[in-house]
Image (cartoon, rainbow, N blue to C red):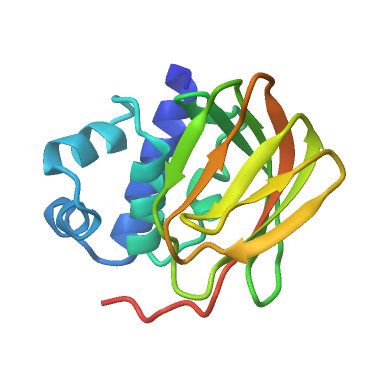
Length: 176
């Protein structure tokens, strides 16, 4: 992520945290990350992983798309890139992303908030995805919906895969 995007993300993250009335220590502890890492993120430094951003969004009781909405560049790590396309305005909250998985990628994703589902539509390549232990193989044009409130994974073989990813969030829980 470029410096401008990191600074934008940091300021947005800080405003979401402050809107909850939370300290750096509280959010860092709740998200399972070091306070120093959260401080660096809010200052526009560091290189946050997708999992770290998801954990922060979950703790802030905000859709992932809300956390990353101000960023116009793809976020990525370990062969996976995601970019927010759009966010729905209704209920349930729905986020749409473009996603690219490099060849020979195996990405394990942490469980999202209770009731969250992902719908994948494969555009190109080959992809195995779904809850750990219950994955499905997709070929171009196929769509799969699965519960994302449990650990899940994405795996490619010899070619990259591109897909549309829709995240439909479950009921938002009350903030602590």
